[in-house]
Length: 366
Ligand code: TRP
Image 1 (cartoon, helix red, strand yellow):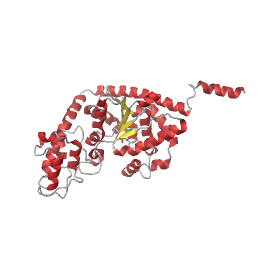
Image 2 (tube, rainbow, N blue to C red):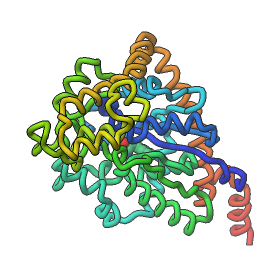
Image 3 (spheres, rainbow, N blue to C red):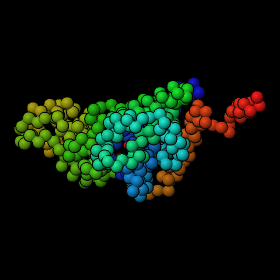
Image 4 (tube, helix red, strand yellow):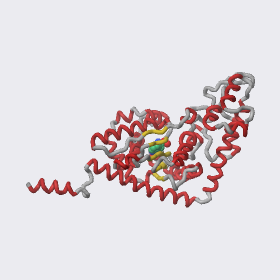
C-alpha cells in the first residue's frame, strides 16, 4: 500500500460530445503526449467520459455513441500510444458508479451548488429550474473517476480546478471518516496562459462547438486557412500603420500557444521571434493579414501530421475499438481493486470478512 502511494499515476479525460479541437490540443492533449513520453509516470489512464456526457445529453445518447470513436481517433492521431497509455470508456467501468454512490454521502447539496463550474454550466444550459440530479452530481462522479485509478496527477484545463477541489475534499473526508484509503490528487495545469483557455476564433472566451468558433484537430487545410483569416484581432487596428493592441487579440493568443522560434526562419524571416513581431505590431506598421498568414503556416505545420495520422487510422476502425476494449479491461481491474479497498475501509465487504462472521457468531453465543 505505501509502495503504491509512491507511484505517479495520471488520470484525465474528455466528454465525447464532438471532435476535439485545437483548444483541447494546447490545453491538454499536447501535454498528455509529453507526459506519456517523459517516462515519469507508472500508469496513465485517459477516460472517454461518456457517462458524464450523458448527464447533460440524456436525450441524445446517439451523439455520445458516435463521438466515442472520434475522440479515440483524435487521441491516437495526436500521439497517444495505447502501449503506454490506457484509454478507457467510463460507462463500462461499474466500480465508478459504486464509488460515486458512496461518495454522495460525503458531499452536501449546498457544496455542489457552490461549485463554480457547475454554476456556469447550469446557466449555459438554461437548466436553472429543472436540473437533472445526475448533472448536478457529476463532480462527485468525477471524483470517483480520479480516485478509482489512484491518480496522483490530473492534467486538465483551468475549468477543471473546481472539480479537483471537490475531489480532494471527498478524499479528505473519506480518509478521515473511514481511514487512509484514497489518494489525494493534484491538478496539472497548462504551462502558459494562452494554453489555459484558448479563445474561439471569434475571440469569445472559450472554444466550443455550440458557438461554432472552433478549429478542429482534423480540420482540412482550406478550412484552417479560412478560419484563421477570419479571426478576431484588434478592432481598432484599421490601417497597417496604426499601432495595434495585443490585449484580447486572438491571433496573438494563438501564436502564444502554437508558435515556436523555429517557425520564424521557416515562415516569417522578418522577425527572429514572437517578441519582435509583437513589438512591431504594437508600434504600428504590421498588418493583421501578415500576422494571420504566419499563424496559418504555423497551424498548418502542426496540424498536418495529426490529420494525416488520423486519415491513416480511419482506415481501420475495428482496431480503434480493439484498443478501447483492451484499455477498458485493464481499467476495470484497476478500478475494481480500488472499489474493494473502499468497501473494506467502509467495512461493507461482508462475505470476504471472516472476522465479521465470527464476531456475529460470538454475539449470539454469549
Ligand atoms: N469534466 C471533463 C470535461 O468536461 C471530463 C472528465 C471526466 C475528466 N472525468 C474526468 C477530466 C476526470 C479529468 C479527470 O472535459
